[in-house]
Image 1 (cartoon, rainbow, N blue to C red):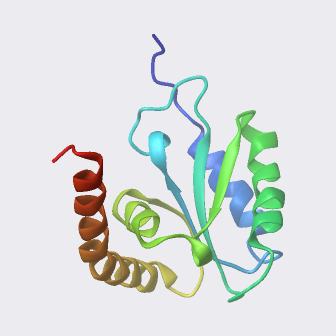
Image 2: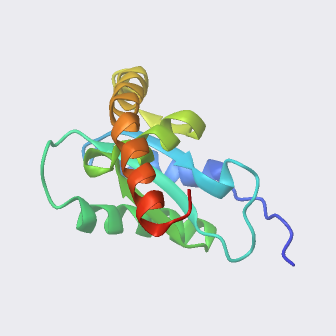
Length: 139
């Protein structure tokens, strides 16, 4: 069907570093098909961002941030705010993410917090999945 496509990660990294101070970014990580070398011509580029602000309109800021690398690489960039991400997504980003930007050594703090949240959450996720499978009759 489609072959894999190489994404110019350096351009994504550079454009993120340019806007990091303006948008109070603590951490930026590349994840998804680009990191797994599975991107195709129709794939987007997934970037996870941890903001310094504890609350705010993360979605509109994420859209503004995505605009910068999109101009550089001519591909859709999906910016995901980690501040409001569910534990499973944080775990995915922590386990496969490639560091694009870091302020004040935030990567290790994020990584350890993401793992703690996920392993606390995993029990409830499994219980929910068991109940859903039982309800649907697919045990």
